[in-house]
Amino acid sequence: MNHELGLHDFMPGAVGPDGMARAGSPLPPGAKVADEAVVIEAIKTVYDPEIPVNLYDLGLIYDLEIFDDGTVKIEMTLTAPACPVAGEIPKMVADAAAGADGVGEVEVRLVWDPPWTKARMSDEARLILDMF
Image (cartoon, rainbow, N blue to C red; front, side, top):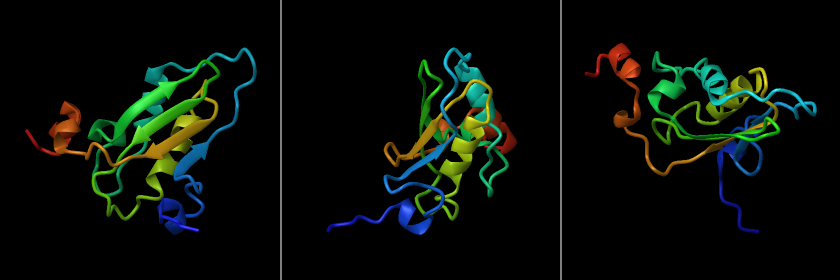
């Protein structure tokens, strides 16, 4: 069996064998589903442990999709592949998003393409990090 090493091999509790971090549970039928702003605010509570800026403003969230049943799928990256908390951050994002009202199951997929650059940061993040 050919097995490619992934985050799950190094952080077995944080991500599944498919490399996805998951959290939450299905919403009850008829429940009001969160809009994008609510999910973004939840994600903004997660900070890179080495940088005093939340992951959303750092530009690490590449895609956010909210489905009619409250399921949320997120694609994100990290500032560097060798990030020491690579296995923990996707789970932190999944947990934060799942904690928002109107969010059901959350799936976070870590991607490396396109590579993250400082150009993806918000103006607020650049101001905090004095990068103007």
